[in-house]
Length: 81
Ligand SMILES: [Ca+2]
Ligand SMILES: [Ca+2]
Image (cartoon, rainbow, N blue to C red; front, side, top):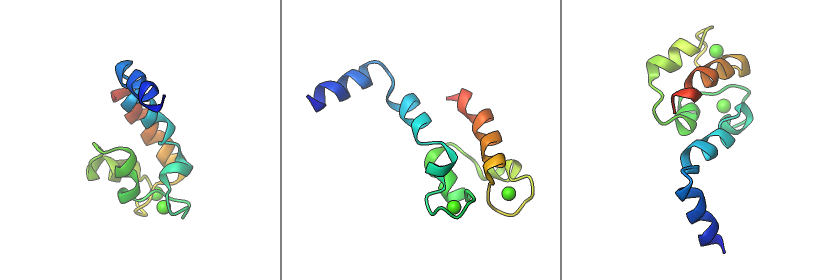
């Protein structure tokens, strides 16, 4: 049964899009629950994220994305994929 379900998901092309969505909310990406998303954490959820894009999203330049900074990044990055 599992294989049938997985195959169906892949066949529908939901594998990357749907699962990426599910795993990219702030709390999920902040894997160490520090309250900020580091570049290392962000790149897990956004493999294509460049350091430049991360730095641009880090508006206060503290090296981590707050929930607000992260949401802004996610909003701009999500439609691309
Ligand atoms: Ca963190
Ligand atoms: Ca920041």
